[in-house]
Length: 56
Length: 497
Image (cartoon, rainbow over all chains, first blue to last red; front, side, top):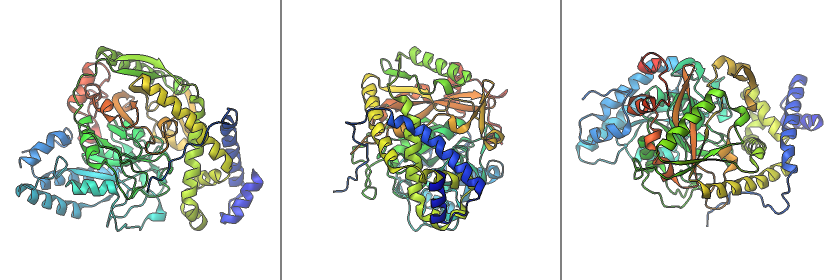
């Protein structure tokens, strides 16, 4: 996670401090744990719900 | 004829405006004067458009005198959240990045209100980029709750809710992705409505102030009747918005006052339970008792996958928002507050596959809610599970109830944002804030969620739902012991100021 963050930091030129990187990485890991439930259910026959552009 | 700005409602004032008993100019001056006087205390407005408002009011007055009456909003003062584009008036989205942006067009909702003859008083404060529920804005200041200025007004449409609650306008338009209309409406004790996705055009809403697939244009008023009148004006298909629903718009006022006997109401369990304060639970129980006394049939309901909602909500909203901000993140990152910037950067770390998984899970949850709403016509649940927090608590990052301190991000919300969305012509579910419950000098609200495009179910609830700030609605709720007056007089100090 940290490596990916450092890459984004360079690409976007955020100039994040080391403390910022640690904070964001920690939060991203929290989100990863939160999102893990999405992989725990059987979604094999379920299509994503998307809002379709209804223009003709 | 003298108007009591604090007690007045659109539905009461409209006939008087039409019959020329009151003047649009006089009414505009009255609300402008209150807005100017109370804004240093509440910080509800970021911009007041006094000169244009008075010119528009004068035109409305001329038209009404020439019998060119446009409808129930003709001459009625309103405000707009600062993320809806307004022609000739700066639109900041609560950020310095757009501090000098003056659009040359109106959002469709704004245009429709202007076409109806309503008078724009100004733009209201909001959470930075609508990314939060407090309206503690590092650039434009904190909006304070009119019922107690030590407390937050909620957000992200906090300025709109405070302005309506403190009678600094009669109605306001906001946006709601994850409670951004309903949360501040509940905290300020006014009516808030998140209409079904597609019912009100999103054209003109600043990109990046709400997730693409969950953000709705919503409204805040002082009574349910007013809510129906304003929704009637802004609803309807808009060819400028590709996701606008080309569905018939019913007469929202028709059901008001009709019997609710026999309606089936589901008391949603399993989502808020562990995040609900005892006081809120007790208030919901009281509200349910009232529903039963009105002849409604209430039953406890739930769906199997409620536990997925926080993940779906967070993933959808963060990723879609970050995508919208990509150009600014690359060029103006130093103009975000640290918290907001960190939030978007965190979202950039979310794998694309996870976003797709969230949308797949979202379909499961939506289908379950669709099935549930075939059994019951409405759901009742807390808008927020805890008492309104103080500004100080929010700045420290927690809310406190029942002797517990809970990090704010752990508190649940946004159920309708992701749990109730559909593909093609129908999308997100509507939800409305209604009954009013006081606590520690502030108020919160339970909310009702009918099925998609079933607005009449909501507006039929007027008997219960007229729990806006003052006047007969609140009085009725007091009589039913749903609410208790806050102070000796039950009045709002700053609103009465």
